[in-house]
Length: 196
Image (cartoon, rainbow, N blue to C red; front, side, top):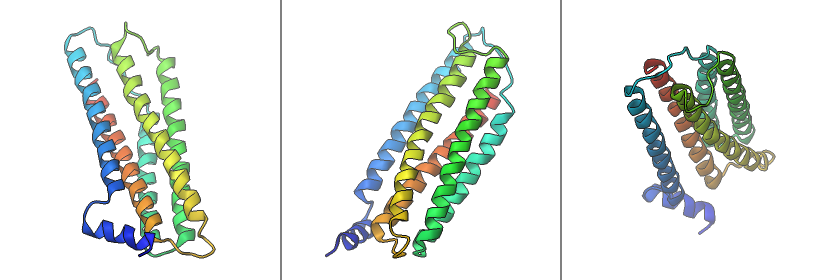
């Protein structure tokens, strides 16, 4: 039995071990952000909380991360059709949109600095915004690295146009992680808009 057949067989009988590890990672990230959000709510209730408007550029970054999720899902669909070229294109577009998201986040942080919102214990409201968006950005960078790995895996088979089961598994896992990061950002952004 080949490695590809073993991968497909393992997947059809239950959760693939690699997917299980990915879900454990996602659960740990959710717990981390739940702790941050709980601390945010508790500290806000204590008073002396600076209220400020979030930079408008974050609307654009939210739209970009949503578009990147669509392009990643398109990549998965193309992989299942065994179209390596379109799969690589979709993963590449997703990577570029993810990089644009980070650039827009950086611009958002610059806007916060311009309105005198800094990372400071004297201003916990601003500090929490930097921590929440910064930790999310760190995880998004790990997602971009994962996208690059998948991109080069798929590019290596463009000539043969054979997106095998192992590569499809990696693309699906990458998509799961990327969708999670996109959904996490939307939830964080809505939370920050509602709980200023």
